[in-house]
Image 1 (cartoon, helix red, strand yellow):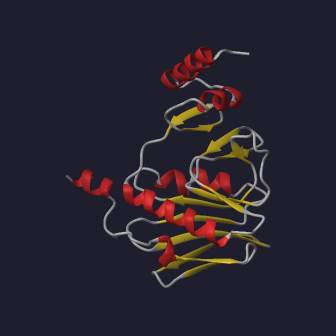
Image 2: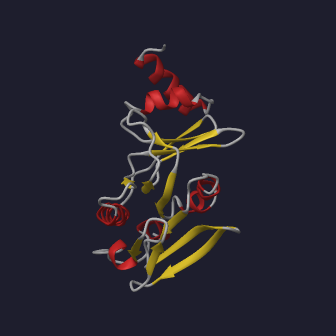
Length: 210
């Protein structure tokens, strides 16, 4: 077994040279890393920091789900918990902003395999990945029933809900809108998701214009 120093050197060299590392090496190094990294087929990507509005929305969602699921067998996890996606050709590890899990992995694991709900808060820098690569990956998870993508600039949530015909896209708009999750017997209101949020252009967009 490699020492922590050897794992760190392997990890950093992979980041610098874009070399492939194994899932085991990624997970071992990530345990002690001060920066979060996501993993796609052997390639490691450092995650950038988020702004206060992003954190407020993510915290609101996590808090509301926590309260709604009190006494329920399902539970909510925040953005410190990874999701593992095992595809035929490779594995991925992502850090969603929130997830609801009804079939939890063992407590010693650092990831979940079977989220029932996954939530991502969109921003300019992550939008394409959240709407493309991550959506494609999340929707392959057998246990997943709902994928939510939350806008920051205005009260809009795009949902992909599992049906008998496959995943169907739904749009929820306005603070009066309510997202029903019958499988969990709960409802998630946009008013709660966006509590204390001041709407406006994404600061990243404003900086690009400047």
